[in-house]
Amino acid sequence: MKPNGAWNPYVAGGLAGLLGVLSVLLVGQFFGASTSFVRTAGMIEQVFGPERVAEMDYFIRVVPQIDWQWMFVFGILLGSLVSSLTSGTFRWQTVPDMWARSFGHTPVKRGVVAFCGGVVAMFGARLADG
Image (tube, rainbow, N blue to C red; front, side, top):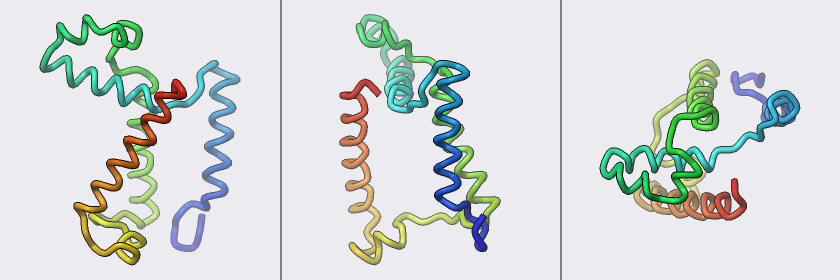
């Protein structure tokens, strides 16, 4: 750990890589997250129109349910929260300091750019089949 309580990014990255290798060796599964977002969308859509989801070819192949990959994404959220709380680095902020220095303290602008970046990243991940 660094003096401020945060993890060294090289150690954390190395451990994440080791965990990925062990996952493939022991369970035969690669880590992934993009399908869990599609499954979540399917679960939300089931609330409003379950018959439509049941008829979609994609959701017949990829059933919208909570699975290991969905729990992996939830674990990322929970793990990062616990890590930031235990290191004392957790804080609520609408705009990161680096963004504010470069582009000003505008939460709406930051949200739009973050959303667009997420769309591009998700499109690329789905295009590559995860």
